[in-house]
Length: 78
Length: 147
Image 1 (tube, one colour):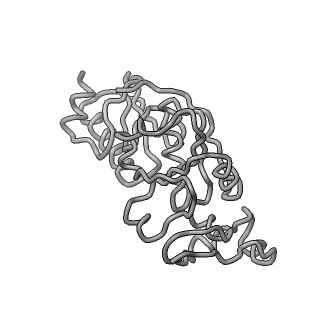
Image 2: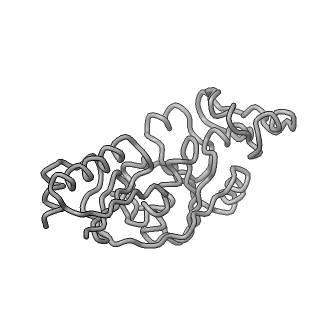
């Protein structure tokens, strides 16, 4: 199971990102553990300024803006 | 991209401590936008402006061996910037809580036209307690300005 963290301090884009990942995972039938990281100190520990960020299995794969559906599909099938 | 680093809790300082640190040689780093700084700026002897969105490209311009106090309007953007600098290996950094709004409530000098921020003033005090306590304690003196 992929562990996915969405990093953001609660902005609209962060919520959209979580919803979109959840939606794509269900559509693809991929089991994921989705977690929100909203604590600034934890977010900044990844070393980027732009949110939302997405971390999959400990690696930052995205920072800044809502990721596209295609991109999410690639992450989930990789 | 980066793996996760566990950062220490950011050091927070009040405007009074900030002024003392500046008098001892600390650098103020204002992370507000240039337009904000042009309209109202901290009046301090050693201050640089690097807007938050430029910090990822420009953090290497900053000295790692000098005390740096990060400032912005309310202390939120500067807290983010403080953590970013900590991630980049800066150990002598602190965030000025309350930002320019608290600085002005303390009566510390600014350059430019002073503006009121009723929302911030109504929800918190310069003393860290409820606004009603602050006003009765009389700690929120009007700021001095240079125009």
